[in-house]
Figure 1 (cartoon, helix red, strand yellow):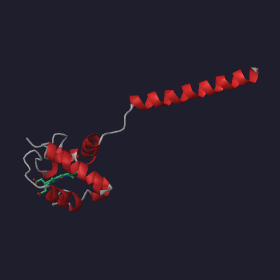
Figure 2 (figure 1 turned 180 degrees about the vertical axis):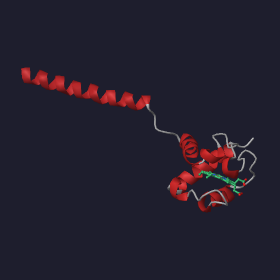
Figure 3 (figure 1 turned 90 degrees about the vertical axis):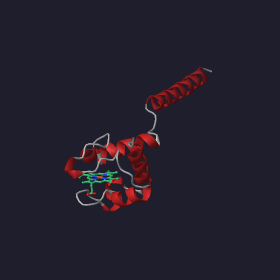
Amino acid sequence: MVLRIYFLFFLLFGLVACSNNQSENDVLPPETPKEKGTSLFIMHCASCHGEDGKLGASGAKDLTMSKLSDQEIEKIIVNGKNAMPPMKVLLENKENIDLVIKHVKSLRN
Ligand code: HEC
């Protein structure tokens, strides 16, 4: 009988421990695709283009004035252009490139 109570106690303790983990996840939700596009841009592009796209360091174009299509932006990201180095390896995959393209277009006025 006593053993049974201990067993119940540990079972309950286990449940509480699990539910604690759950609430930690609530505090730190996973990045949404939009947030990921923003943080990739800040990490890999903002040094020349600025967080708002207007910095223009090393002769970078003002992205808020850019009229390029998704395909044209992708080509520049993949191949680079003049002083802009190819960024494909840094962005790792097509999914990340697409997220960054969306972010670049969201900077336009
Ligand atoms: C080392 C500095 C540098 C970095 C880092 C950089 N760029 Fe650029 N970017 C440039 C320069 C310089 C140009 C202008 C190229 C030209 O036309 O001569 C440019 C042009 C562009 C253009 C073309 C704009 C237009 O309308 O002609 C896009 C789009 C662009 N960059 C996006 C990005 C994205 C997205 C990233 C990050 C993945 C990035 N760049 C990282 C320097 C940089």
